[in-house]
Image (cartoon, rainbow, N blue to C red):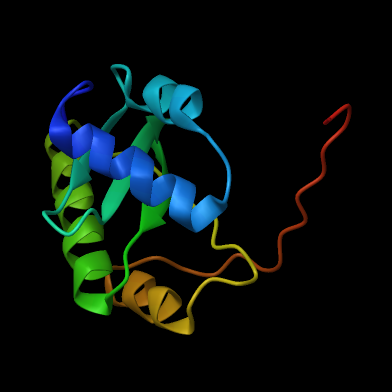
Length: 123
């Protein structure tokens, strides 16, 4: 996924549609190396970011169809394996489609229990 390309613009448009806000600066920062992402012609996309001290954080994963989510997760996991592996973490928000959890399990992810996101000083 090349920053500045038509596909990148499509990702930003899809991101605004899903999240309801302008996050282009965030998406750009997540894609800077060693972060990376994949995008499908439909505009579905995934981002992988480094996890300290090793491994990766996945997300967001934005896809309208289950097969798109499966293809994106499979591609990013193959890429991460090629980069040496390590732990891979993904947080599924409470409103995530149930199918994404099933796809994640199919690809080897395990549930670690409920998660609470806490923030401070957010406008």
